[in-house]
Image (cartoon, rainbow, N blue to C red):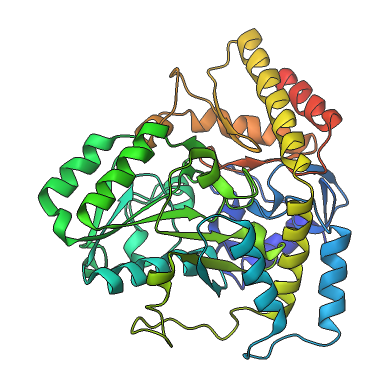
Amino acid sequence: MRSSDIFKESQKYMPGGVNSPVRAYVGLDIDPPVIKKGSGAYIYDEDDNEYIDFVGAWGPMILGHCDEDVVKAIKDTAENAIAFGAPTDLELKVAKFICNTVDNFEMLRMVNSGTEATMSAIKLARGCTKRDKIVKFAGCYHGHFDGFLVAAGSGVLTSNIPGSPGVPVGSIENTLIAQYNDIDSVKELFEKQGEDIAAVIIEPIAGNMGVIPADQKFLEDLREICTKYGTILIYDEVMTGFRVAYKGAESLYGVKPDLKTYAKIMGGGLPCGVYGGRRDLMEQLTPLGPVYQAGTMSGNPIVMAAGYAQLQKLYSNPGYYDKMDKLGEMLQKGAEEVAKEKGLPLVINRRVNMMTLFFNESSKVTNYEEAKASNTELYGKFFKHMLKNGMFLAPSQFEAMFLCTRHTEEHIDKYVDLMRKF
């Protein structure tokens, strides 16, 4: 079947024909390509069209598609283990490796997704502090847990939904909203309700309203406020963990959280997540403490094998990050030159191998409101032009693009050339 036929048939059996909303290309008036194969920096659809991939399964494919070491680990493990719901040596190897090579993971627990990691970290923070309220930032998306679906980014923003039907008022009444990179908005909340705030959760480099890095001083002040009020600071590094640096965004800022969540890359492309941090907090989880959290498939042996292979490779090759940073800089400079030549309104935010091209008249994009001012219609035209010419990008202005170790200067040159033709 052709891509278009498969997608139309899928709409009979799955809402919108997809299992995650952004894949449906809402508002673009085209059907998404149905992907059947990936290799290195390329993916191929059911019509045998080839695309240079700058989505990378939304971040996890940092080594490119079907990396030989990751694939071998999956195959070798599947010969003997698929699932047990029991302790395995593989989950110990991964946990120990992460704790020994990443700062401030004193203890951790595996889960199956980024959403599960962030909601579990919030529950733990509430259980440890005996408080109910949390602070999140407008435009940051931490998964589809009810308490997070307020002023969220990513698919919620793209679909123009202010929150989501099906979320009871009681589920969000303890969620307070601050403005990203605006410490005064945080101080105001704490001055009024600080003694009731269990946790502040933040993406230190936001990726779900487009890539927007936190300001250094903003994070430092946020840490100071949380310490003052006995509030637990949680970094959502679901995107940035092992991506912007092996040790994540925390290592770029040097500002320490109490808990943090990782996912995506750490599973080697398979469903995975983890939350962890301070030992005294993590020891409050059952069976050691009173805060309950469980998962039948957590620490699945095949997932652990894939993740272990990927993490070992990244840790052993620190030059990968330098290579991706240089390619990112090359792409950024090229795109900025084209924008200047063509008079395109463009702001580019980048940290190492994550970036977003905002079609925006502003001189900078530092928060949710500034991101929302971007020209989504122009981005849609740009996206369709690039897709038609073999360039696979995020189908939303409010997403990140990701570089992988298998991208080359030739791929960057092609991107810039296609942008110039647009």
